[in-house]
Amino acid sequence: MTDAALPRRAARRRFFPGTAGAVGLGLSGALGLLGLLAGRISPGDPRAGGSPTFSPPSWEFLMGTNQLGRQILPQVVHGLATTLTVVVSVLVMSVVLAVAVGTLSGYFGGILDSVLMRVLDMVQSVPRFLLAIVVAALFGPRLEYLILLLGLTSWTFLARIVRAEVLSVRRREFVEASRSVGSSGLRTLVRHVLPHVVPPVVVVVPLLASRLVLIEASLAFLGLGDPSRISLGYLLAEAQPNLQYYWWLSVFPGLVLVAMVLGFNLLGDAFNDALNPQRLRVDAPATRRWSRSGTVVGLPLSLDLDAGDAPRLRNTT
Image 1 (cartoon, rainbow, N blue to C red):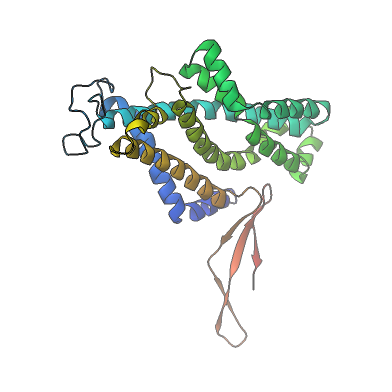
Image 2: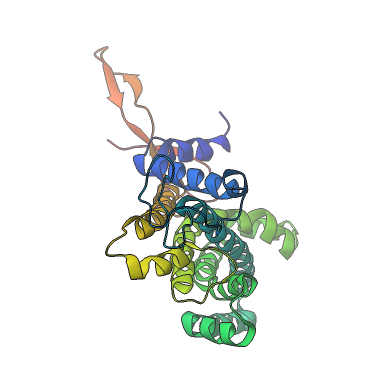
């Protein structure tokens, strides 16, 4: 096995056997597939009525109906699709901004670092909910404005992590060696620095996704979401007046929200265990050596993988 394949194999061994990783991957994958196929699962208008009002869950109405005779299942599926649309769009914007700002700030330093960090501090100090109220009042509560607002305000934490990783990597021997052989700054940045930014980004993205799910649901619950799009937070707000008597109106949207947040958090924890950017330690199978008396003596070894270093075995006895 090549040296390059060892970190990937070690990461897989730490991720897949874990219960947290399997549950997180299962929940996130199932909900993502459900949101992606929302149009096929419920092709009609999810707000269409015509069913009996306040029908409890049954074989005919799997999640019951609400006070207007609308089935809860199509609304939950389309609300899940809306939430995933917001989360994925905001994540793309946040990752692009965070990697660009964190990499440029950490690699070049100096005045550029100071300016970018002051911009980051300014963005981080803006109250997100107050800004959402202002945007909704000025331009209307539209989904595009919500995505833009969250995308421009959710990248700061990830940018600090990327900057810290770049500051650590740029002092490594292999980066100095690349510069010494005449590689340009851009080539060194792309070939030797950016690959080490990927693990922390992969770890933080699911955790950021879980926060975005709660933020989007909270804004929709407060009436700051797009009224033309069904959202899980909107369903919870709609169910609030009848919460005491008709439990299914809030339980099913709430369970989907809990499952999304739980799945993303477990996925982030599993990625953290598998792709620890500081040190990836994996127990290797015990090798054997022969003692002078002819008996087989177990020699437990561990595999230490430092970022940028070649894998090496060391004795742990």
